[in-house]
Length: 361
Image (cartoon, rainbow, N blue to C red; front, side, top):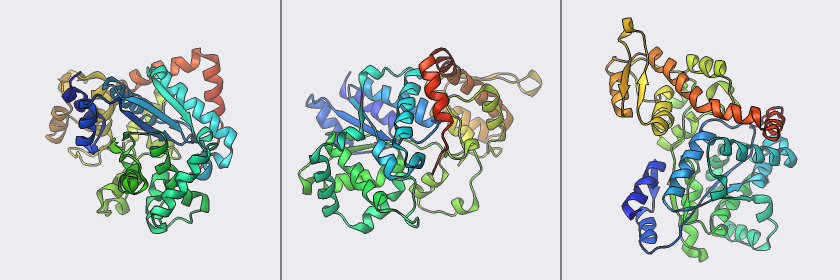
């Protein structure tokens, strides 16, 4: 692939790409780039963490980038996920990996690294301390949103350490690219800004879009002016099952959730049903058909999301048209995952065990 073709794939992953020229220069020099993402094992896995994450990793692999996935079990422990039960956290981490396999991700091409292994090495904690010395407590607290917390939360001392640990992950894994969600932006910018001071190579950042909740935005969220803060506030939550589609939802659950989803007529902004078409359905199928009865206009084919969006905005496509067909396409995506967990006895046992755990914020 040419440099331009590789960069095109990277831009398909990133809603925001910081350090694009740095990435391009390394590709042109023939360097084997390393990208990393980390995830907290914290309960059931929704479609953004599962299917979309797998699609994005495949694109990075196609661009010739070596991908490291950090299973952030110690981070989840520090953040009191799964009630701070490390055994449960590890089970959830194993389950996430099985879901990605079921999504078609070739996990042999991905390097999975457990934080519980990294923290055994003394240099890891030395790096945490170096980062702590290079920044202020005030800035570390501002980074608390990376773990789903607010500055106003009553943070524990362990949670205060979390951002320094995540910045350490970037340097310790020798990541050229931090490829995480937009909600992780603040810590990635911290790593970029202190890299020179600490003698590390400055990481680029490729931030993917955060799918918003299926539920309607509240007045409080609508009044938040900062774009990043709005994005984080609107994102789906696994602690609110109706806010997202999960990777092993049954067909009737998918239809019921999408039926209830927020989808105001003719409105595009903060419309989760349209977002699912844009970031899940079109990347998967490229061309789609909105099926409907002849008395309601008959079937309509679309070869781009923009055309669908424009027709919806113009009133040519109705909310029920979107919802019925989104449910149909989502079921097509999730059906093979359901089958995988039904036919693979070990995977099914793991899934059942994880779904018995209580999800904690």
